Structure formats: structure tokens, C-alpha cells
Image (tube, rainbow, N blue to C red; front, side, top):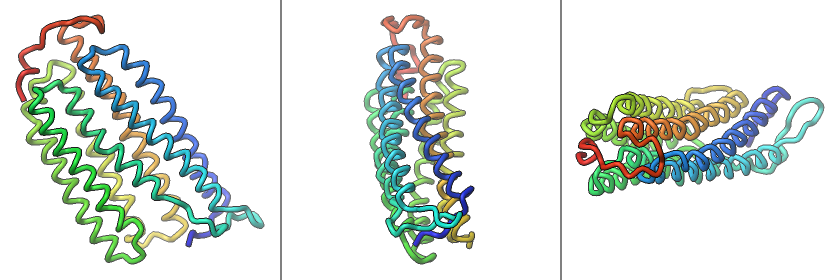
Length: 265
């Protein structure tokens, strides 16, 4: 059962949903247009960035509608209408977009075909399982169940970090100039944003008051989604442009030969 909210609490979440939806829409336009500004070998990464924010934007529109239908203003406070707030849209979104986020990072590195497929499938599968295994805890009514599934999902999160910070290390070190710095930073962005989700997930376990927990969970997820999808995609674009500059591809139609670092893993 949803808790009663003040006008300011309800409006804060309502407006943040609107902001997040608009940010996803704007990012989609940027990535579609930005795709024409990178060399063909990097366009798959920008395509995935566009798909990520398109899927997220659609789900935020549905979340926005569900939030509006779940509450009604009565005597100056927002009371639950009895219509459930469908927060499961988030997990449907994450199940589709989180695997793509790791896939686009691998794609923009322009590794060998074998190495690309190996990393993509392992990271994408781990990311999908992380989301799927976290969902039973999200909808659980007791602290123990929430904590158990959260712990299991965290194991997959740790595995993803292990691959990103160990197995992909040599490939990242071979990136040219500014691209190397950007790839290091995007790993940190991923760590910071994905690490934020477990904190939000734990708020009900930590005994935060019901109304505050609902508001903080929605605010936390919105902020993390904007950074992890829109901000992440912008950095993917920047990495592609930095690699083009290092390879001397000043025009997107150039067919410059692959440099030595692109042939390794």
C-alpha cells in the first residue's frame, strides 16, 4: 500500500519523472544525429545508445502515467487511489537496457571480433541476470527476502566489475591518448551509477520512513538512470570521436587502416 504524501513530496517525484522522460527524449535525438558524426565501425555503439534511451524514455512515460494514477489530492495531501503504482516498468527497462550498456562499451573499443563477442555475451548475460535476480527482492514484503535477492544480484554486479577492471584492462591501456582517459572515466561512471542502485534498493531495509522511502527511491533511480544512460551515452560518443582523432579519421567516411591497438584484446 502506498503511503500518504505531502504536495511537495508528490510534486517532486512527478516533476522528476517528467524531467527524466524529457532527458531521455533529448538524448535519443542527440545519439541519432551523433551517429552520423562517427566512423562506421563506431556506429553500432551509438545505435545502442539511442536504443537504450528510447526504451528508457518509453518506460518513464509509463511510470509517469502510473504515478499520476496512483494518487489523488484530498484535503491538501495526496492519498493513494487504490490503483497500484507499477514500478515494475523499471525492471523491464533495465532488463533491456543494462545489457546494452555494457555491450556498447565493448563495441566502441573496436576489439577483435572474437574478443568482442566473448566480452559482450558474458557481460550482457551477467547484467541481465543481475536485474532479473534483483526483482524478487524489489517486490518482496519482508526484509529478509529483499536482502537475500539483493545479495545474489550483487554477486553478478561484482563479476561485471571484475571483468571491466581486470580482463578489459589491457585493451583499455592500448587505447590512444584521450580515448584511454575517457574509457577509464566511463568505467568509473558505471561503477558510481550502478553502485547507486543498491543503495536505493536498501532504503526500505534501513528503516527509512515509508513516505520518505518511496520518494527517495524514485529520486535515486531517476538520477542514476539519467547518469547511467544519457551521461554514459555521451561519453561513448566522446570516446568514438577521440579514437577517430587519434586514427586521423577527420571525416566519417574515411577508411583509415585499423591501428595496431585495435587488433589486440
